[in-house]
Amino acid sequence: LLIFPATVLTFVNVPFLRDMSDLLFDNLLVYNIIFAALIIFFAYFYTAIIYNPDDLAENLRKNGGFIPGIRPGKKTSEYIDRILGRITFIGAVYVAFVCVIPSFLQREPFNLPFYFGGTSLLIVVGVTLDFVQQVESFLITHSYEGFVRKRGMKGPRRYNI
Image 1 (cartoon, one colour):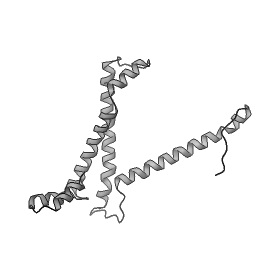
Image 2 (tube, one colour; image 1 turned 30 degrees about the horizontal axis):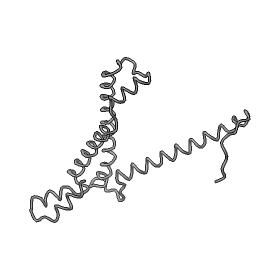
Image 3 (cartoon, helix red, strand yellow; image 1 turned 90 degrees about the vertical axis):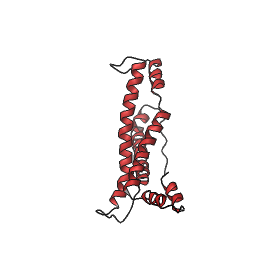
Image 4 (cartoon, helix red, strand yellow; image 1 turned 60 degrees about the vertical axis):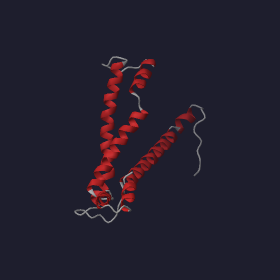
């Protein structure tokens, strides 16, 4: 979203617009501020589309659940909305920080010779955490194999990899 306007503005011969395009290139303060603001905006946008506090409160009430100290219905919906806003803010600021900090580490005081973009860093960490979770689940499944065999039940099959 930020690179496209900068690219289009480079083809225009208006000096003011050319100066604006120079501000939108990677590794500049204005670019990073707009980038962080867009991350925070889209985090709230995504949360607003995916999570509906009224539906969550209604499903909680239908299934016999409740939040201790909060009345079912409108109060539960308001409480969920308030908590969801706080969680979204913390998560959005964290993701914006992770995505923007690598470009600051590449600048003058630090001058790091390599560059891991914030998005690629998120992907690497996410894949690594998923892999660790799958390995732990595999190990837990196989640690109960002896217990299952003693009972005469059919346990998980062992595959030679």
